[in-house]
Amino acid sequence: MRVPLADRIGQRFNRLVITKVSEQDRTKVVCQCDCGREHVTRVNPLVRGRTKSCGCLNKELTAERSRSHGYTSASQTPEITKVYRAWMHMKDRCLRPNTKKFKNHGGRGITIHGPWVVNFELFLKHVGVPEHTGLSLDRVDNELGYVPGNVRWATTQEQNNNKRTCRYVTYEGVTKNITQWAHEKGLNPRTLRARLFELGMPIDKAFTTRPNYSNRVAKDLK
Image (cartoon, rainbow, N blue to C red; front, side):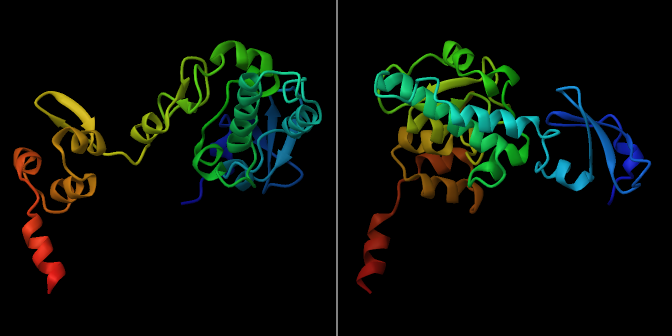
């Protein structure tokens, strides 16, 4: 159901807040940008995340890309260069609709702490450098953005366990995702997932029933 434009007054979309319906074109709205400028646009690009500012954000990103801060030069340590690249990729995922991963980040409302967008030094000061190789940037709560207190360096396994698609099960007062329970119980994650969510097995039975490999072998021999 289409929302009347007048009902959207006061709504925020990234850096823009809708203030009124345009008097010159009643199909558009007037927005106040965080930078202080007004911007007239249609609502659809705002809702879809294609329009995020009056144009100031794109200028900032372009300017940021045109200068390296010295962090990508050979004179810097590999650790600092890795953080810089993670920072750039973070901004691509959240702020550039034409990038592959935008749909699951900026496209679903994942934002970046404002000062971090234009200031790598502040970002670096907060996240620090990864303690060892094999770590990448991750959000503690996947429903929140890249904001202070919600970013960390994590292993691939930690990130996989933290995905939105993970399904969690509570057993004897302990909550873990399917993969974690499967490893603990010596089961295949796909087998455990099928037992719980497709076959509807009770948790006790799903955890304790051993796979009948003899039946599987017999099937393969037929």
